Image (cartoon, rainbow, N blue to C red; front, side, top):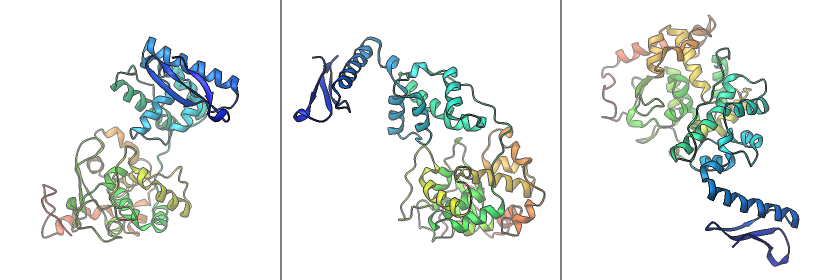
Length: 355
């Protein structure tokens, strides 16, 4: 039965209903104008017939795919501007490097290459990869923009202390792990009490972004932040304001983004520029400025390739190390503190609980 338009009780917006290609349709057109409703009815019927003839993969729109991606837990933060540019009718099969270039020019004119990569190419790639896994799109790679000349944002000790002073108590442990140990947001939020050793300031990260477990060690100031709230008997150290464990999502730091944004604003920092991940950049900059230990930086930061961390060797001013020490951020004492313990941190994390 072809689609037909009708009004409920003879008034209001028109609806369409019927069965096309075995698909039952009953939905609002969103308009009370008969001519517009007819146009929507005809287009909707044509879409269903086209899919029947060519298959869903050929007729899937970016808008539909993005909705499915977000419903599956995909990062939604940068999707809105992309869909505004694409509109409702852009097909997944149309998206290629030329389309990406036009989208970048329209959405992010004169923006740094890293911004285009992060906010346009990465979300589009993630959506298409999801579809490709389901056989609904052809796998493809997009040319990424160069970002070598982009300034790596990191916090000065003064900015960091302002952020800490303004932060809500429940996010202080996460800030401590990120700023003092170089954790990514998701890593910090999931550190378990059984993997934390307060005596040495060490924490074991069994689940990391690159799949390589690693041990981190915190300076005294970071330990103060981790201990800002009573440590739990077990489970994750970082908790919501109600004391619950964070439910992990694909965007990692999204769970604390609201509280982090408020802290940035109160501290006079731009939350668009200073995100939770900036704390990892800050840790790397601080650690190398004090220790000059590039091997240690790679090991503690979990970088697999040296070129990924080279930038942190060149961006710190000469007085940064002394400014950090005055505020309790002394990364040169980490090894000494561990050696001073009567009982060293265990080699097989998870075998004992330290409270």
